[in-house]
Image (tube, rainbow, N blue to C red; front, side):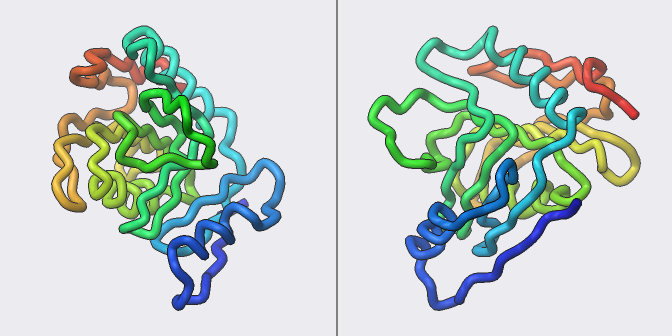
Length: 193
């Protein structure tokens, strides 16, 4: 099953788009994001996809401060890029008074995306640009569908819409996340076909 896109009236404001996103009746269990102003409905990730995210999450729990959390279904907003994204993992400080269904992306310290065949382009290009625009310090892209074979890329030092590649490894190698995490992720623990 592939992603479905729902185009909006170009005259609608960001608030109108977010209201449409939040109030519409989407298929149960689907992931609904706004990517470059277009509502995108994707199927739930496959087992293998979830295992990769879970392995990363397990490593991160041992190094994050007590007042931070790792979220699996938290929406993060980048209005300047017309984006409402649901990364596979978001690491952010707890927001005790937050009652919205999303937080500003700028609050995130790290986002992790694991590509699926239907969303790989968005994860590699659109989301990377949006996360950099929001100033998220680190973006970890696990890309089992990369041309040339599975890769894991750590992006950092965002400037405007661009990240610098801090590390790029083939799946099976270890990628090191710098401070404040200072943790190695052994991608040989990820499932393979």
